[in-house]
Image (cartoon, rainbow, N blue to C red; front, side, top):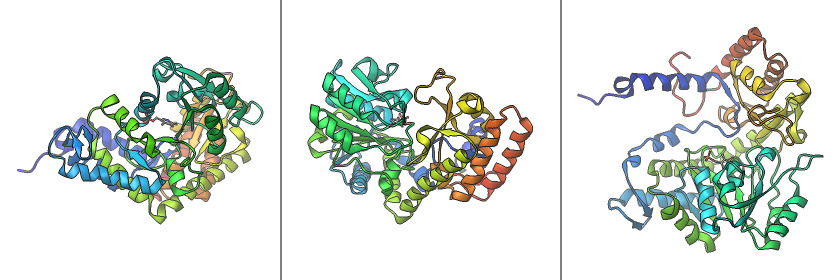
Amino acid sequence: MSEPNLTQTDPEIATLIGREVQRQHEKLRLIPSENYASKAVMEATGSVLSNKYSEGYAGKRYYEGQQVVDEVETLAIKRLKSLFGVDHANVQPYSGSPANLAVYFAFCQPGDAVVGMALPSGGHLTHGWNVSITGGYFNAHQYGVRQEDELVDFDQVAKLAREHRPRLIWCGATAYPRIIDYDRFAEIAQDVGAVLVADIAHIAGLVAAGVHPSPVGKAEVITSTTHKSLRGPRGGMIMCDRKHRKKVDKAVFPGLQGGPHNGTTAAIAVAAHEASQPAFKHYGSAIVENARALAEALCGHGLRLVTGGTDNHLILADLTPKGVPGKVAAQALDRAGIVCNYNSIPFDPRKPFDPSGIRLGTPALTSRGMGADEMKHVGRWIAAVVEAPDDDRLQGRVAGEVRDLCASFPAPGVPASSTA
Ligand SMILES: *Cc1c(COP(=O)(O)O)cnc(C)c1O
């Protein structure tokens, strides 16, 4: 008798996954941190490798039976080193936040000064924001963007660095639509003897594709997630100069974690392989072209974009001129089949749980093969729904048009929907 599959063992969960398959098929997914991992990445993630325990590093494990896993992890590291041109990579962090925490653990004592970008300006929680452990256990000082142009305030970064002599300076963001100037950050870090950490979680795929400058050679430590624009499995990684290798590895294991997720490690290797192919460069440039096209369309329909546009995969729209709160807009858009998230804008007069903006990104649509023509439609739909967030009939009509568009752009890694 063959082994029962998920539908037979647990129809309840199978049905829920089926509904998520359908959602990912028929909606436009514009959350900039999300994507569609390939079928190959999904297969590696869900493979038997996840049955294995492998505390330690290749050749120095605390359990036997590592004949295969050692090779898998070594291959993932080798591919990342070659993809990004770094001395060392650690692929064991469970996700982006644990990767960042490991960097604090490698370089700081509790109470040490650190400098990072404030959440309301686009920084990540783990860059020292007060509700994060990184803001509580370290003496975190936060920089932001300038009021006049909404770009990183480098005068403030330099001032905080000189005043507080931090161990770490964090750069990189989670809601910032422009190029990160690693040279400027490196100069400031060097002046005060701080270690510059570049968190490329959102833009790792753009860096790998060569459409965003690389922090390699400028930041001594680089952290990232593997599941955003890089299009790998859910995971994290730390890349660094040779001289920091031991410290970083020790901080991840045994400092912060136990056994690595070996299926994830294999899938990171697959993603790094995919990212080294010519097609990935096209994908990277298409992400940026699509973001520009969408930004242009939104501006054309009278939306105000933070910084006036985008250089990367991400758009922050300030809905204040439309008189619609971000959350109301995001919920109306979801009903219309367009999924994004409400987001604070710099100097937002509204509360974080009810902010003025929405955040949009093009990686997932680009992975489906959509291009500038589709972005024009998407921009028009977004503007229409935002203008009339209570118009159910409009939302129903747009949702139908979205479904029709999505039907022509099959999503990678998503099984054909039973209802499609
Ligand atoms: C997403 C993100 C993280 C955290 O990643 P998780 O996997 O959600 O823990 C860290 N830094 C930045 C800049 C991010 O955008």
